[in-house]
Image (cartoon, each protein chain N blue to C red):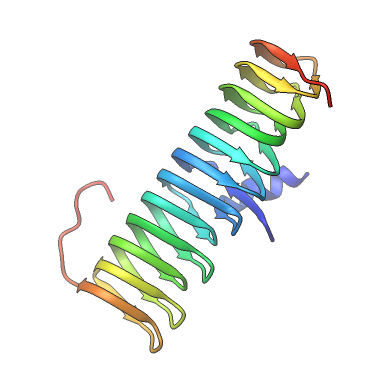
Length: 118
Length: 105
């Protein structure tokens, strides 16, 4: 059944036609093509696709940005800002990659102590 | 691909608005307004007022539901709240508590 396939994937997907306002927390990988305004706290990998518009404070283990993101971002492992990305805000992570072509306005800090519980 | 999936470990507190189909395996609290269909899977838990085209409940839904087309409460489904819909099915084994208003199509 379809359900089995979804469950085994253990991954969230927010499509282009969806807009979420509020807080989003979880342990699974999440791919976003839609809009999110609020807070995101994820113990996993967050991927912001080209069509996505995120205006949120983000805490995650790994973050890949291909789309638009605005906010304060705290990542415990790696942030990748790809060439199609538009980012404004603050990025905190031990490792950060910014590709040529990406637009970035704000603050970057690569060495910091994470708050407990991430 | 345009089916949004809120996976098992995800918890959303707030508002979800959209026009594509949505499958919930995790937890959603707040409000859902969808010009499409909503599927709440067995593990899914929703505590929200919902406006949707049609909804299938295999998991738990608490809140008022306004469906433009159809509400289906499957045998594993549990639903508490007032519902408004032109078409309704409640399977054997399902749990439901609330007011039903079957509007004319």
